[in-house]
Image 1 (cartoon, rainbow, N blue to C red):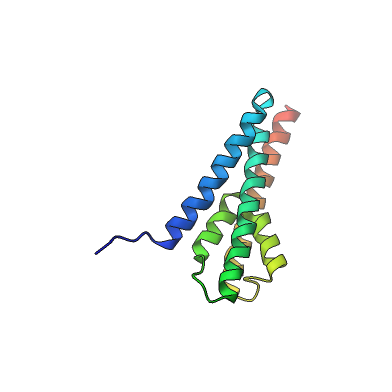
Image 2: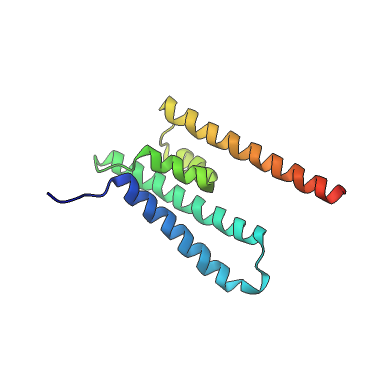
Length: 130
């Protein structure tokens, strides 16, 4: 009996792996100006594009009765920074817009990310003020 990898692990590893490789490649081009903000910006763009592509792929699979991307993978991509790509994918492909449970988790992820950004911005502002 062969051991088969779970689709969530495969999709998650492929998507995150592509994001890390592309981020590293882009950052190598800008090695002279490397800072934390550039690293974060490049990662967010890469993971958002990957997330958008996965939403499109999942929609294509749904329409053609193919093997779907697990929802946990779509949420993982949003959680690690691809929430803008997820939102754009939901909007552009009209995908995952009706399923209430999915949307609740998505918007919870967005809320937590916005709260974290607000806390980080406040911390930077306080450090600048002192």
